[in-house]
Image (cartoon, rainbow, N blue to C red; front, side):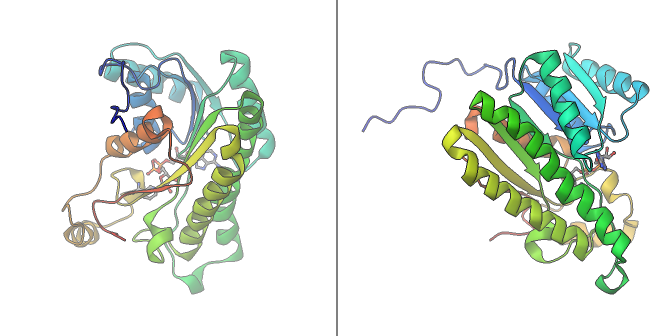
Length: 270
Ligand SMILES: NC(=O)c1ccc[n+]([C@@H]2O[C@H](COP(=O)([O-])OP(=O)(O)OC[C@H]3O[C@@H](n4cnc5c(N)ncnc54)[C@H](O)[C@@H]3O)[C@@H](O)[C@H]2O)c1
């Protein structure tokens, strides 16, 4: 059998997401994984739909200016407030994205919240808050995008779970957080199996210890102890998570669906 290179006939300097319309949720902070992903996707030619519960005109203009400064050109971007706990909000955001760009090619779910508390301290309210954002919210936005992907017979989903779902509780999150992220892994696998015959792919990333506001709750001593237990001996950068999102969003991973990608500095090798 002939051993073809993966992109035979294409130059190696091509942009991985040229003209692709990518919806990214969870972008409001310039330190977030969602923002780093938006910037990297812009550099690879994507047009962006940026969603966040906290989105305002000011945040939208800060995001646009920051991406332009980082990438060297102003992104083609639509920024919208969206609470992923609401199915109506999610449907509306996807409709507005399609109105603006005519289609959507990719969804990256980076919205999430974390709470650190022992099992016996988790109230009903805290449980529901975590589940509603991390699991139901991801379900809602996936469902809104999938309605469109099914019509198009194409589309890619990248979901963010967590190492917490794999190792039995997080270094930062409690049992409710870990369970919500376990649900995200199962949800992603189910979507991958159900929609693969239509050419729609879904994969999930399990990050750990990425330097964003999610680590702000750790004291210096706690952080030092965690770093000493990471085989690569450092925390991860949001840009390194963005790289994993780019791989899963692009045709580089065209034959991958239902996979779980570990981005954890070697903390969990299995
Ligand atoms: N940073 C890490 O080390 C780490 C580790 C494991 C998993 N993760 C996961 O990666 C994802 C991104 O995390 P991050 O570190 O960039 O955190 P972040 O707090 O910087 O970003 C999360 C964003 O989600 C938004 N959000 C919260 N609730 C929302 C809602 N109901 N609707 C819409 N948006 C909402 C927030 O406003 C925020 O901008 C999360 O799902 C998180 O659980 C992060």
